[in-house]
Image 1 (cartoon, helix red, strand yellow):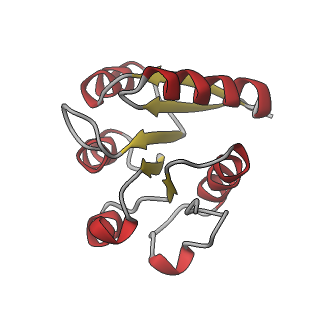
Image 2 (cartoon, rainbow, N blue to C red):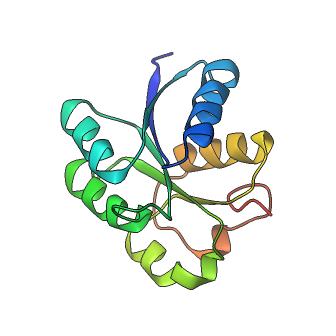
Amino acid sequence: MQQRRVLIVDDTTPVRVLLQHTFKELMPNYHAVVSPNGAKALDELQQQSFDLILTDYDMPDMDGLELAKKVRQILPDARIVLMSCNDFRQFCDDVEKMKIDGYLKKPFNVTQLLKSVEHAMGNHGDFSSSRLKPGLVKAN
């Protein structure tokens, strides 16, 4: 099986390290690259292609939805999973417009992460609140 590439974007170092380690140990068919912010993530996207972008929503230089919009211009078919401490309903309309493939509410556990990634990679397309199932896309 061909190794898939995931770009993890989060401004918090421990989160990046933990997520990268999780992918390495539990999802060996993924190669995880980390980025501390949206600008550096865009630099990575100019250098290489990714199958999945796992991005925090609340970051200082650009939020996850701004990054998703720019990702769509560079890699229109990439899957995007948004992570946030915020309630999804605050930006539901924007998420649907950006065709976000999944949403993880922080804090989430490893099982919720794995299921969200699996769901996003297997069901690319329009994101709607009907796809939010506890433990599948949205972590409770």
